[in-house]
Amino acid sequence: MEISILQAVLFGLFACLASMPGMGGTVLGNYTLGRPLVAGLVVGIIMGDIQTGIIVGAAIQVVYIALVTPGGTVSADVRAISYIGIPLSIVAIKGLGLDPSSAAAAQMATALGAAVGTLGTVLFYGTATINLVWQHMGWKAVEKGDFKKLYLVDMGLPWISHLLCSFIPTVIITKMGSDMVDVIKTALPMDGIAMKTLFTVGSLLPAVGVAILLKQVVVKATDLLTFFFGFTLAACMGVNLVGAAIIGGFFGVINYKIKMLAIHKAAVAGANTVEDEEEDI
Image (cartoon, helix red, strand yellow):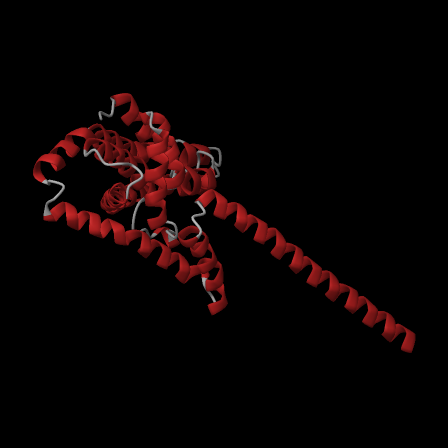
């Protein structure tokens, strides 16, 4: 499976948009276009295989579901994972003849995503370093009272940083994707130790992602009940992600109603207490 130059350019463009605050804000960029689950759909549309794109994106998303960037510190760059890792994973899965929905394909995708994400941190910090130049220009403009120049500093000049450290690397790496898969097929046979090791590591990464998420959201022991309920739906009852999400929505509405009813009762009880005190007076 070949990646055309047009497809590689589109991947580079989305890699820029996924981390450009000036292009729709962080919510639309980093926390939407930059998420592997969303990027899987985008990459699938660009490569003409939406099903494989979504499957690969979902497999990688599990690993990085709890990824945050406190203070600009990153352990992996999601834009590289999304728009370099997912295209390469699709090419590798197709080139190696794997079933996209198989465990081996998911393990291949998560392992490649982890490798590319680590590489992407270099690109992330390269972008941040170049942006310091534009930030310095912005402070100069503020000192001079030239506030109109801040539009250029915020929405124009960062494109240079992203073109150098995001667009160009993404285009080059994704365009070479098929050649890299040919090297893998020749040098690393599927039944070799290297590929078995890759698949083993890939199978463990989703557990790490879920563990990190649980560490952040579980405050008390009873919070685990929600997790185990979802696990029961998926593992024991065969409910897919869409069905589990719908069931979770039902429980969310029920919980909201119960909370509001408790607040209403507390308010009524408080009003009755005030009335009783006034009558005593």
